[in-house]
Image 1 (cartoon, one colour):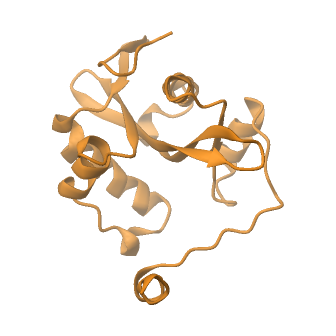
Image 2: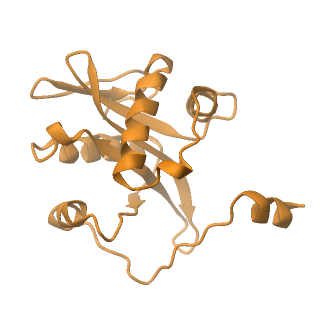
Length: 170
């Protein structure tokens, strides 16, 4: 088993997958921006290096990130965090985002990234992974089904943000 408390490398073809470091933040943000455009969510894109640094490396860090490089170019990232599945009493790793630059899709990198995330999750004592995919992203949906992931059609996503969140919290 890989010790994820240290940097690690998984080499796939000429691509290296490793735990993200503080020096990766600007490139992660650049890929996140590409991802936001891909998902038609660029109006919701507000992340900064400071926010990511706190989330990944701060005193109360709660998220984990992996990156993939081809030569000196970051070509993919994954971000997630452990959560509790209360009815099962088990830890799950919630994969918030996985993005691969278009030129590198369809070559097996998605599978290798998911494997690396699963290894990261086992290092966090997680026994499963959960994530979402947009219903119009047919390529992603087919890929996830192909690897044996199960769609959970019984859930409806909700969010409480900004003003309404602050109202509730006060």
